[in-house]
Amino acid sequence: MQVPTPLSKLITLARTARAHIEWLAKSEYKEVGYADWEAATVEGYCGIAAAYLERLANQNGLHPIYCIGTFKSYCRLIGTYQALSGHAWIKYHDHIIDITASQFANTESRIERDFNKRVYVCKSTNPHFSEFAVGPNAKQMVSSWYVETLDELCDKTEAVWKQKCFNNVLSTNRSLMRLASENRSNHLPGATGYPLASTFNQKT
Image (tube, rainbow, N blue to C red; front, side, top):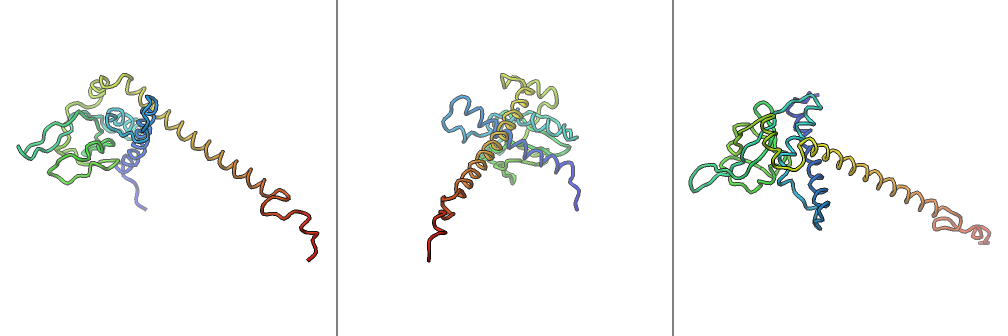
């Protein structure tokens, strides 16, 4: 049996973080009254997502580096990469792990890429990522992007996910209770599936 590497453990945590951030986005869109809140994307959530993944990693003994910079697109006409958007991600040794790169799915590139992945992993030399701050300095800069602090937003991400799980369990229990009640009703004398007592007394 192959022992998971630290990077593979981090990628597994990244999948979890992505699911939680997706639900945060949907929850917030629902809060402000968007009718199509279930179609919410992670666009604009990169700073929160990177901080949340870093938190999960730290809780599991892994210590990636929080990074911010610009995400670049390749311009064919002038043959260079140009800044497309401010962005945040985490770095682990010589790898970038980005759980909101899917917002750049249609980006032009000269290298093989699939930014539409829910968890995008690449070498830190990827020309689409231009880093200009890391660690606490990066977080300080990102704090201006949001009203709440990153810690508060990470706490909210955990809270809305726990509430989602609780609601799922509650819904499942209610469904099971309803089925149990229907089964009891169906097995009462005279109910569908059981003949009436008088049926047994009929002569053939």
